[in-house]
Length: 329
Image: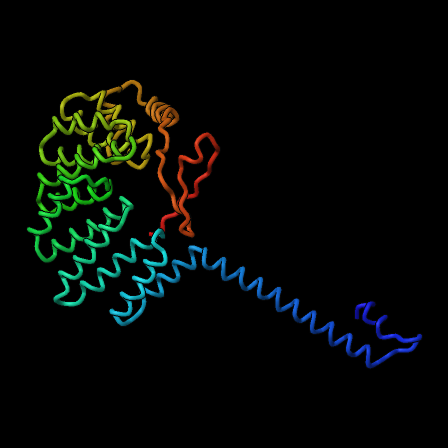
């Protein structure tokens, strides 16, 4: 018991039990009030933290997505979009609303209208591209002519979605629309936001051209994208077939320096032995030298952590940075 309370309980050297009881009760009430106040502050802090926590937001998204009744699920997901217009999960929210609408027979126009409205309001280039690709794949399943019309419209548009054009290139090529697919890969090269994206699109474009017998144009594109190690595989193949064997081997060395698993795939040891029969032991040294000499800078991409927080790689320029990469697949 606090000494001050005991002191107040004395009167002329005798214990005043009634006064002491009152003081203790008052002290207990004050103490209880302080505890309640502290708990309120702690609880408020926790709630405030939950409001800001990306994990909490993602949990909210999953709860909205799991609502059994379609109409209520759509309503909850739209509320989520309104509450979190800038969160990474909005891409998935758009998709789940669309899928819910499209699952019901006779809702095609309504589903497309939702996507079109979402695209119109969305400012993020990557998410716009995702929604356009979603619309393309859905249209192909119900009317391939409309899908081709949409793809043609996008090819002629000012859209900058690099991934969208890459995906459309693959998809259209697979579906036999080769001319349109070729245009998509060219567009991906044009809209690439940095050298890595442009060279990566060039590799895909060059491989596509080569697969369809356009080796001269493929060679030109792949040489322009040679700073990307993945260009080395198709480039080496074309050069070897053209009789430029030393250049082909150099392309394969460049490939293997960045992708060691390709060494057996392209049979580099055997090809090197053919071109340089007396210097086979030098191959490992050349691969290592090429690997060490690679000084390609990481492009200024935007990364996201496990809680959904975004980081711009360019903000760390000039500083030492360790990246731990994890992909939940």
